[in-house]
Length: 319
Ligand SMILES: Nc1ncnc2c1ncn2[C@@H]1O[C@H](COP(=O)(O)OP(=O)(O)O)[C@@H](O)[C@H]1O
Ligand SMILES: N[C@@H](CCOP(=O)(O)O)C(=O)O
Image (cartoon, rainbow, N blue to C red; front, side, top):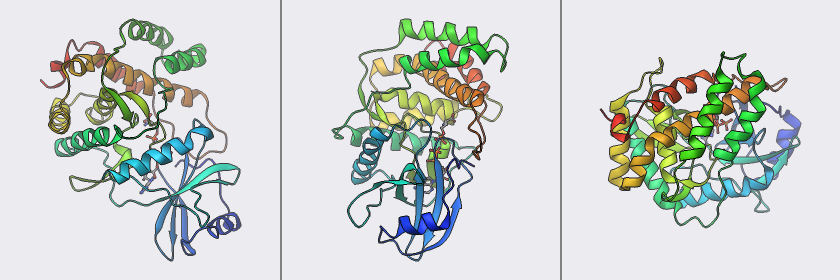
């Protein structure tokens, strides 16, 4: 459960009095997530999610994320909507943290996505990229090469406590990616953390896309690489080519991939694997005292990284 900041009854009712959302009937910490504190709030009017921003969230960037969600929702992507208070304000301070009430979306996230669900994901991701083209705000991806170097420096002293030789493997991978990281690919607004726990389904239909707090401006195909990493491996970290094929085919049907994007996929997948290896490693080494959160295993992404390292070209993902 990710709850870093506790919200008591009095604080909650004072907060809710700013809104026209009715009275709270239930308020519970949510048993998923890593980055922020999330509560499910039920009121006499509706259900909401209350998010308190923690850890990596930079308060100055929160308006960007909320505006991105609103822009995508207006374009037909099923993202939550920030709720505005009676004075028109969406972003608040609650229990000393920046906070926002957002609309609750129905559906459930899947632990073992099917090929059909990967196809739905590919189509939605391409649609999201197309709608994102008219979003006029931008934010650099602070978890790309420069961010990885920074995390590698912060984690290297104790990386070998997690696995012997890990610091060297990370150093070598950063050097390889630094020398070959693609440029000139189509860019735009990307989600950058589109894991299965951030997509809600009813059957094979996507009913929600959540957690835009790593959203940024970067190569569109990097989002596909994040999805290949997080949707197309089984629980034993074995690659699932049928999943990747359906994801990419449906993406391509909604937004045709350019040849340079296809060629860059193995490198982008390596970069995405390294990104999650590093943030997980950092979180593993730096637990937040008193937080209720289950740290994720960094080595899951070392296994994926090794898989991508032996892929020669994008065809390796679909055979
Ligand atoms: N708008 C929403 N509608 C329904 N459930 C949500 C919504 N936002 C978050 N959740 C639930 O809260 C969990 C944690 O949210 P998430 O944004 O992924 O947190 P974190 O940023 O901490 O990773 C999700 O897995 C989902 O179950
Ligand atoms: N997806 C990341 C962790 C970020 O947490 P999320 O709950 O916001 O997806 C990972 O799995 O390492």
